[in-house]
Image (cartoon, rainbow, N blue to C red; front, side, top):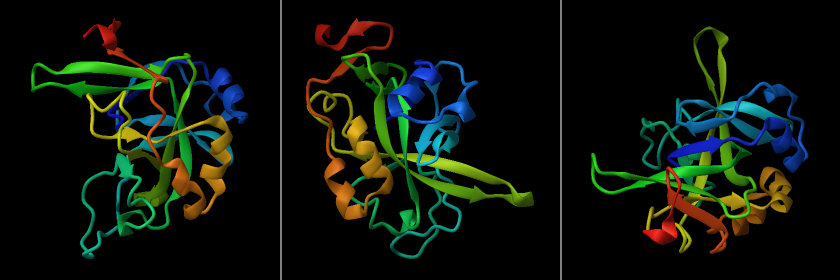
Length: 205
């Protein structure tokens, strides 16, 4: 599942690729290391906007009725439409050039950079919520949706983000849970480039 993201493609190119209005985020600079808790470019039915990566689950409870305490960075595809902690969430897409994962023991971890082999954008399926804070503040939040990994990613992590082709984005944003369920599957093998962060190809390891 995505631990860190990067988006270095220009916002103009992102907006063109998605056929979306990018004026709200037009001043966003390329970013090589986007961490949970930071704002990320997000596509909704209204166009591109900024949302905080991580849903603060204020007022949300688990199946036992107990408050959910941890910030929700990722949501499992298997339970995203049935788990009480996700009740009432919206849907969005997070466009990125890729993401990072880590393997190995503490202090000896290896960072892996994962991107599209064709150099194009990767579009993560995501859910959204709004945190209402003191003084009337409202913070739009987003969490990526994950599924089991494909063979490309399995040696690095036991989960990966749900990736969408451009043609399936409207269905993800507007379809019923039954209509979007077939989209929440591992990305086809052979379409991702995986290499050590710093430029060493995965195949060479």
